Every structure is written in C-alpha cells, then in structure tokens.
Length: 481
Image (cartoon, rainbow, N blue to C red; front, side):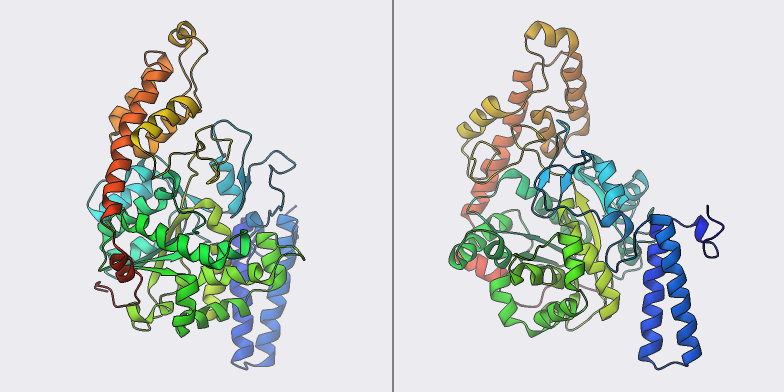
C-alpha cells in the first residue's frame, strides 16, 4: 500500500527516499546553524520525520546516515552469507560460484550504478580515443557518480572535464608483502590509462598504517613493503610530473592539512556508523575504527596543498576494486557535511586465483597467482599445473562438447591482458566449440604473460631509490585546471 506514504513517496525508489532524507537532514542542520526562525526549523524537522516514516515503510529499515538501503548488509563472517550471497567486504571476498562473484547482484546490493555502453561511448567521445579494454569488457563494471540519486547516467566527473573543469585521480595499495601479483596491477594499469588520457594529476596512497593494524606485521616491515611496492607501481609508467605517491606513516605527520581532513571525517562519523558499514566489533583496536577516515582524506583536494594550493573544490575520481567501496560510501556521505564535493568511483571486478574464481589468492601461497617476480619458467609451470580448466576430461569429449570459457582461468586472465578484442572473441568461440584445447589455451596465456611480466621487471630495475624519493616527495605537480 502506498496511499499512506508522503506526497510522491509511493513513486520513489528506496535510494530516492534515502537521498531526499539526507538532503532534508542537511537543510535542518543549516537552518539551525543559521539560527533561522523557529517555525521554519519546526517545519523542516516535521518533514524530516515524515520522510523517515516513509523510508521505513518502503524499505523495512530505519534510516541511518551513511548507510543507503542496499548498503547496510554487513557481515563479519569470512564465508558466504547465510542466504548464499557472495561475501564482499574490504578484507574478505568469497563465492561458491565457479564463474566468480555475481556482479549484477553486487551492484544492487551496494546501490552503485552499472557502467553501460552509453557511459563507455561518452568516455570515448570526451577522450577522443578508444576506451580501455577494462571498460570495453566490463572489468571496470560499476560506478558512483557525484549525485547518487541519479543512478543511471549523471557522470559529473565527465561533465566537469567537458567544461574544462578538470579533476584528479586517487587510488591506492595496502602493502603487505614484497612482491605484487598480477591482480594488484589492475587498478594501476587502468589508472595510468586515465592519467594519460585526461592528462591529470594522480595521488597514490600506500596504507602501511592499515596493514600494521590488521596484520601481524611490524611497523618497520609495513614501511619496507611500502617502499618495495612503490617501485612496482612506478614501473607501471606513471608520469613523475603528475604523480604523488605517499606513505600514510610518513605523510600524516608531515601534512597538517591532510590530518585536519582526517579529523573532520572522524568527527562526522559515529562508532555505530562504522560498525554498521565495516562490521567492527568491541574487541577491535581503536586504530581500525579510526582508519576509514584516513582512507577518506585523499578524496579531498585540500589534503594536498602542495598540489592544489588549498583548493577545496577539485573533483576526485577513484578507480578501485569493488571491495573498497564501503570506505567511499562513508566518504561520499560525509563530504557535503564538511564542505567538499563527493568523490566519484569506478569499480573493478576481482582478479581470480589460478585455482578458480571461487578461491582466494594469497601472498603466502606462491601458486595461487602469477607474481611480478616470477620467471618465464615459473609462469609456464604455474599456468600448466595450477590454472583451473573449463575443459572436458578427455580430448574426445572436449572436441565433441567444447569447453566453458566462463569458468576457465586461462581465458579469464586473457580477458584482462589480451588487448585484441577480435582475437579474444575467436579464442572464446574456438574453446567453446572444442576447436581449441585446454593445453592450447594455456599456451596462449603463457605467451601473453611472459613478455608482459619480463617487460615490467626490466622497468622496475630502472627504478632507483632516488626515483622513489622523487615520487614520494610532497611537491607541486604539472597540470592546468
């Protein structure tokens, strides 16, 4: 029944109501701050209360600031949810499906928007070049634009670029080991393309503080991993004149502006909110509870006065894996309360482990993925021995019935790293028809990965300690806004 709802509420989606509630809450706070007439404040409060009733009737949930209707599902369990849903949070990703996480369901659950062909076409139109293969193939599959209420196609970051009001990029890495694997490269490969395409500055946060809080690692090890990981990131080819890489352990103490933004976020997020978003428990250390504000701070241009000269209005675009989205749902809710624009996001899918998309890659298991330190021989052995196959048990059965590229890890990896769309589609068709055998498919992957990793290793050798220092020194960057 909708006739008992507020005017127009029956035609509104849960997200519509959520955004209207959030906006009305801001209105009430503004009126109180400006000491408006009591009658005006009372009227605004009554509308706010009525919207909360409407929201409860439509969603069955109480309204919570920073927790949109589809974003309130939180579990501390390391496995799938009780109803069989995939488990996705910043620390745990698991699924029972050989094809991997159901990203369409995840979009609905997280309340983000699917990257459709219209957006891909617009990126091509604005940039004047072909969209990156990660966009063409749905590897970056979801986004949050500046106005959550417009779920289909607001894309304000691109609007700003078209009007010559540029933006900056922010991505990051949690350094927990010396060596990165191929999956770690995905956001950096795409971020480099965005930087080159739009000619914009980039900040890269290395969250060594986070790893110290969550892992059984010393501060010294976390910082050492930061320096080693920075070399791999630099080897991706980022422009030193447009890129600032920073360690939280170093930059927090050297930048009062950054820390001020951390404190602003901390003041506007309650303990109940972070428990609801991240699933923190009473036994978690207080550092974990405070950390989300540190990951939020790079979303605001004023955190980098050496780059943006104190400007607070520069739009931020964050390419990241979808498991990092809870941090930025919180950030987007807080941003207007502290006078900053909401960051926009582009979400990527997860890179599967060699053993299959339903298993987890682990830095402690050298056979779970291809690492950037692997030799050509190691790459060949890992793919041949450990890459999960979608083929049949015998050559005869495979020729007759064909393989399943949707669960075959070798094909999944080619989807990430083979540039040619036509060639990739032919491989898919040949494997599905049985014309291409599993061993032949693995050979294609080996031949694709070996030169990529060898080339990366050669570039990394050229990254000196002095180069790392230059990238990590706070300084002005070259850009024109």
